[in-house]
Image 1: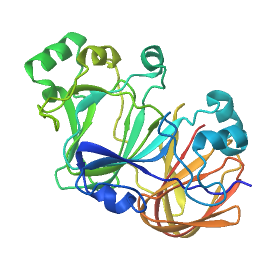
Image 2 (image 1 turned 120 degrees about the vertical axis):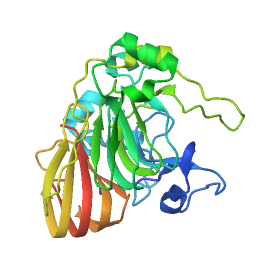
Image 3 (image 1 turned 135 degrees about the vertical axis):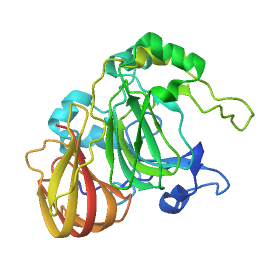
Length: 324
């Protein structure tokens, strides 16, 4: 019988990372406390980085092995028909102590053609932000391909980008093809398609541990950028106590914000999809299939598609993610 699943995080060293992920996610893992860790892959369907169950009788099995055995009971019939054994999402916790590169991710068609991969549409929920911390997302005015190329060549790219000063609880959608960067002093939850394809455009003139600048992908990036996009990137919404507020919906994933105060029962019978819950604040007990899981900030649990109902008790906020 399936049950609420937790997974073993995978910490990734990044030159722009910090130390907080070691404290939050490093228990029981082999980590080098002298290194900077920028990402925790909390649930991954990316090949060679498949997440492994950390609790219950299925402990030690990876997400693809579970899908092969349980198929639609785990992920949902329509999800299994669409994706087969490939779990289609990747959940990360990101600690940006320094700025990330300005980058872009290809859409589904270009990623499939170039990399035999999904595209990479992603969503961010800000869990912590230093005063004045910023995100860079999209162009601040209509920009042609030629203007973009000239701005990159002359070092004026940043002048073309939207800047968003952020605080805890803000949320943003970044469709594939959107130029973007995470600024320094931000921790966030990232929900994305299961892809690790990134084209770096500008890296703030940094050098790596070997004294060399990191590789840029300007020729690849220019064909991936959607210059005609008109998107409302800021999707921040006020939560509803003991209710659900939609942040984003689409073919790749749906994300709702839930605020729990005492007890809240969530009906999942009509979903035909797995549901993933990420605790973004507070302390919440999740009950399903006769099992209880205690969730604190940044904890993640996956509810199999065969489950019809989940009950939350406690006080806090959750992101709810599934595929429609």
